[in-house]
Length: 221
Image 1: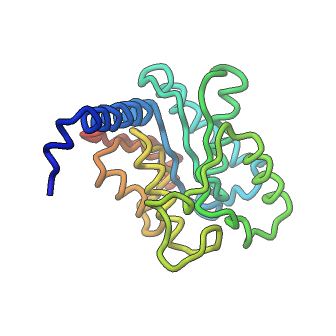
Image 2: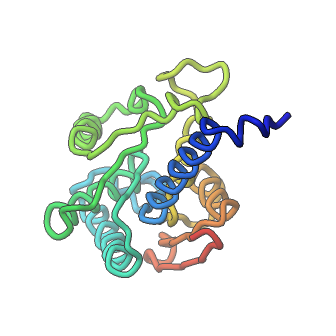
Image 3: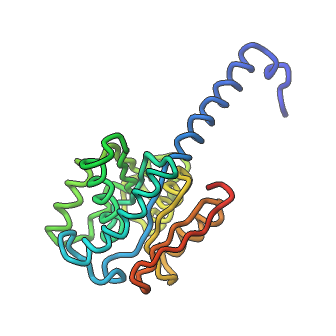
């Protein structure tokens, strides 16, 4: 039941105004934010090292898109998921732009859970992951947030459902998503469908077509 007396009281009006201001701030941040989603290295030309030729080629494709978004769409914030493959390539692409051209942009990592790298055995991968977290302007542990946990799974522990929750968080907090997606089923496909469901704009770099860009504009993006 709505307490109209409270809503019309000074305390009620103050609370309503506070919530409106919080929403305004959130919408403003979303309007300036891009999130990333994409395949693991095996679907991107086996780019297992961030220093190999294929990773650098993908980085060049991402960079072209990001410069356009910064210049023409007012984008200032970027959220990547920290996983091996496209996520990490995207993070370091943003970091390069931040270091060399756009010092004010914000580079954020949204980690699904603290033990994300627990199954990664490669030492180089572990090293780059730690360096990424140390370098990021902000690190968000998504499963610690009230709306993005997985019922019955302890905070910080591995669960495959937390990957999708992480993706949903990134999309919810952004206006545009940049994806490396070949159209196949899986986590990246699920995330891209969520982008469309939420009415956000989707920039897709298609690995099967030499990372040709396709853009679908959303009613909320």
